[in-house]
Image 1 (tube, rainbow, N blue to C red):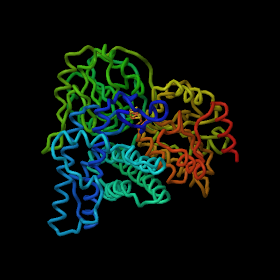
Image 2: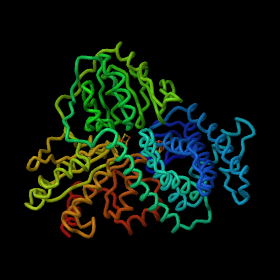
Image 3: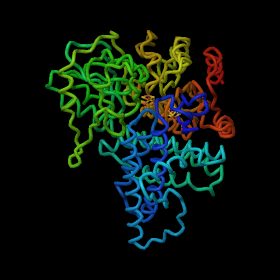
Image 4: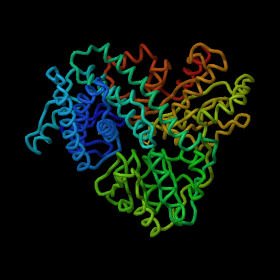
Length: 554
Ligand code: SF4
Ligand code: SF3
């Protein structure tokens, strides 16, 4: 075994990648990512001590969230960049320890390896990295619970970083991140204690999504119903992918008089729904589909592409676009130029990408027409009367929350078939790139309400919860599970893990999860989720619709 990773839905053979990642991550990179998590745990040990003394450390906040975010599936494939972060982390960890020692804090009880291990030379880092991964925890149930927490924290960190880029921070969330990263190293915690840590992680997932929702809404206005062009214009374009709205804002501002159009890709589509972003006339449309089709779609785009976060797919050898891809934030890929913010102003300079675009041909059309979205909580609550009337009259009989991630497994055609097979009086509530499986289908509307209501990015699953809570209030129900809403979630990477844990912490039951259950759930941990929350794998479309109908009518 040259590496071991089982954090995403495409884990090899449904158990884990051992030779090379299905995502393209090679063993050298995989092992260095394990080391980055190890050092983030070490930094957290001392940052947690500082929190107990009431002392905030912004360098630790940024480092730990960035380390978690960097290791999310398909975010960063740049070995040297990851290694540089590891080195920076060890320095930071030692600085934090010195800081505590200077205050004469007794650190003798700290025995965690991540907090104490020191490299004598650079080679030792690579040697040590081989021993600190997932399999360092021998017991499969403890490993499963620890990793479930860590993957939730990765998703939480990603959302936290986006909020932080907009100047929004909640110390409670970062302090929990430290506490949890210490707890997953503690051999004295029982399985019950780790299980409650999993649920606590979910409750902080709700908090971080609420924080990001506030950051987006207060900075860019609340999303409104918007039609987004799928076609192309005659000017050169820049395609921007990922989730970071601060990045697209800066790109739009810097390119507004440049003769270049900006197109969104995959999870950046919801940028069109925000009033302050949609006012830029050169925010032209959305190009392509979910992340996994990028190998083909980037060829025909013709212009430069900017990744602000996951999901990057390594270009094929025959690719003709690999010299026009850029990364920023926690994302990276060896050979792609990486745009760093100015250390003093925090601003990013995208002029290199804009100049690059001017030399390129306009994109080639791969689709035409429009799609509609922008149904985040404020917009839906404005339509509440219309929605409630439709439910009361029986025009809408049920809602299906189908948020999450898309992926390349052929079995994901299930989600397209499921959307098509739903009764015509059912409405789909979606968020995340999972939507690309059905957001272009001609599913029509019910009394003017589209049958696919897209709230936005995966973090906007928070909006779906707000909508459910509003309906619960309007209908005077005690329990969110009494609503005619079923949850059929698609997952791929760790942001979907925090979304799932957030839903569980809110008491949502009977979620169907697919296209496969996570490899990191041991049989016993999976059983706890089944027994306590009714989590189930997907089956066939017909069986599942029947099961959901029974639940809704119960
Ligand atoms: Fe395999 Fe997924 Fe890990 Fe990549 S992220 S190595 S595909 S389990
Ligand atoms: Fe998609 Fe990668 Fe998860 Fe934000 S872009 S949802 S998979």
